[in-house]
Length: 257
Image (cartoon, rainbow, N blue to C red; front, side, top):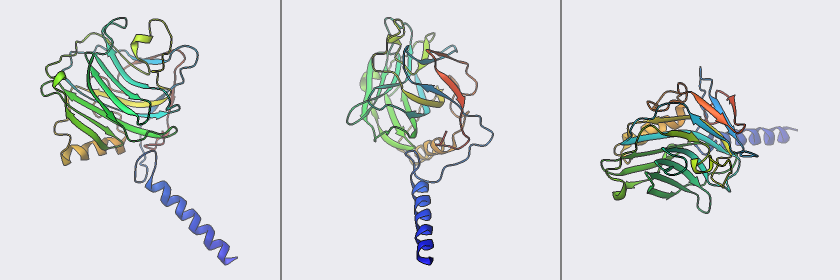
């Protein structure tokens, strides 16, 4: 009897240690997000295309930092996390961030139809929450990609130096806008959950520095609803869902929304 109880205790402790060590792609224990309603969006791309339109005036952009939480339900398709364009029929890659499917998966950033980077990603599994951050600046062409608070890669794109993203277009999540005029999904729609998307004019300078890495680690563990959203802020920017997209409150636990 005593042996059985000891074995049970060891099993419970081991399970808790495993949960504390690895939760949704991140190490460490999950943190409570107190006083945060954490609305989240569910997109399944069944029937008509589903996407979220951010109902705000987008200014001219010469640098940005975009970060958000996401949870894939299907990793076999390319997931359009963010797409901004002036004209859905012609120029739809003024600012596009996608997680491409494949082996390996790749983070893809385009600015004004210029491929800034396509960088292999750490494995993003179905059924896990992840925090992603992408930054770029026109002056130097510097870009950086972070996943779950860790730097995936950074570099400089000569081709993107001097580019200016024009204002006045439409910003969406969940689909690439070249599919929106005919309502057909061409395999670039996000199938999963998304929350706390923030778009800021400010880039991440020196992404390899300790200070910046600590800052991004803070974003990936604090689940703040207000940090870095002077263009689009999850709490303050109105959203409109299309195609049956669902918005629902999440739990108040960072990484277990």
